[in-house]
Image (tube, rainbow, N blue to C red; front, side, top):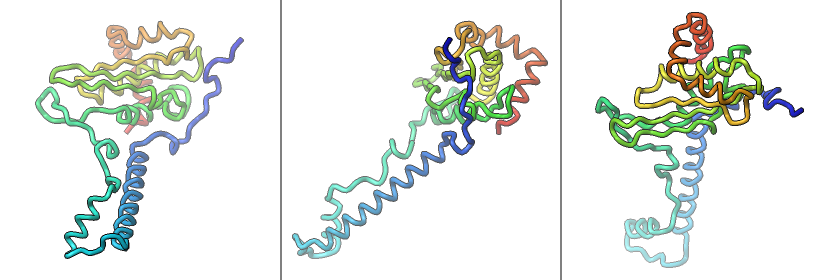
Length: 222
C-alpha cells in the first residue's frame, strides 16, 4: 500500500513563504549591480588611450553613451503591469498570483494552529490568474489546493474558507474556481464539485456553525 501524499507535511516557517518584498529586493540588487557596472564602463572609457581627443565634455559624454551598456531597468524587471479599466470606469491594475497568495496564505488551518501557507496547502505556483482584457469581460482566479493527507475530511471546509476570503476581497469581475491538485485526495471529483457548486456553497454559507468555523479561520488574515 502506498503512503498517502503529504501524510507528514513539512511545515514552512513564515519567513520561507513567498513575498513580493523578496522580488523587490532582488530587483533593487540587480539595478545596483548594473549601476556599478555602468560606472566602471564609463571610467574605463575616459581612461582609454584610444581616440581621447575630445573638444568638450559633451562630446565625450555622447561617445560614452554610445557604448553597449546594460540598461538600468525595464518594465519586465520592475514588475510594471498594464492598467486596465474596471467596470465603473476607474483604472485598476490587473491582479497577479502573488496578490491572491497574500490573501489566502494567512488563513488558519481548521485543525492546527498553522496557516495554509505554512502547511503548503496553498502554493504560489498553483495559482493561475486570467485577467479580463475587455470592459465587461469576466476574469478567472484558479486555485489548486493540496490537502495534507489524501483522506482529509476538512478539504471541503478549507476550500470554502478560501472561497469566502476571495469573494470578500476580489472585485466582481473575477470568477473563482477552487480545485484539489490532481491526485492529492481520494474523493477529488466529489470535493471539486462541492467547492464550485453555487447552490451548495450558498447553503453552506448560511449555516451558522460553518460560518463560525470560517470566521475563526479568517481571523488570522489582515
